[in-house]
Amino acid sequence: MGEYVLLDSGNMQRLERLGNYTLIRPALQAVWQPRLTSGEWNRADAIFSRDSEGGGQWEWRHKISRDFDVLFSNLSFHIKLTNFGHLGLFPEQVDNWDWLRTKIRARMAATNNRNLHVLNLFAYTGGSTLAASQAGAHVVHVDAAKGVVDWARKNAEICRLNERPIRWLVDDALKFLKREERRGSKYQGIILDPPSFGRGPKGEVFKIEKDIFELLDSCKALLDRDALFFLYSCHTPGFTPITLANQIEELFGERKGTLEAGEMVMREAGGRSMPSGVYARWSSE
Image (cartoon, rainbow, N blue to C red; front, side):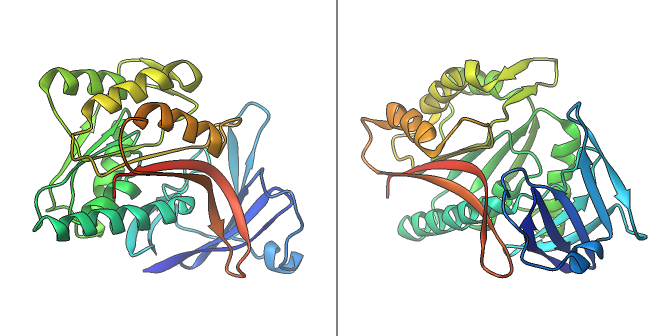
């Protein structure tokens, strides 16, 4: 199984190697010059380009499998070259995954491996679910799309985490939170990566500017008294690290702990960083 590597970026594009294949995909934030030669970029096996209506298409330059597995951050991911340009892997989350593993393992060691329950909302293909499970947590994985929940389960299988305590749920995030609150459920950690816009399995509409406050309040209600962390990330234009930090500070102002915020980045093989979204994370320890 090959690995994922960000080879280069520039001219609002990124050059990525996934195992035996090299791809070019959009990266609107990469407003600088590439470091590799045009010849190296021209050897890409496939290029994804966006159209003016928000969709896009692949240009296949060489014969390439449309789905395969890669290694990244001590995890295995099933890659699919989707019609909207996503691969099912989000390398910009790597620092958050490392942070999750460190926090969870430290708490488990300090409590003689007492069960630690984590909720992952808008969980998509499950990178954060896998990292938390790998560290020993019991995880509830929630996404509105059955196809991506099945994809996440596939990732757990190839990571050999399919026997771990993970609940896979196809549900609307807000409705699930409300039901959990009525049931009196509590979690030691919550992971949240909301989209700018989304639809639930029954057509429920989510708009981050309108719904984020109700979402955060509902998350707060589910955090146990011994809560360990809250991890919040997003890719919405206009949402900066300070935006997320202010939202979380309002949420956890009365709780002791540490709050940090910043840009998520992808690191090129040559060391340069490419920003991709923002995060804020609170920890009690």
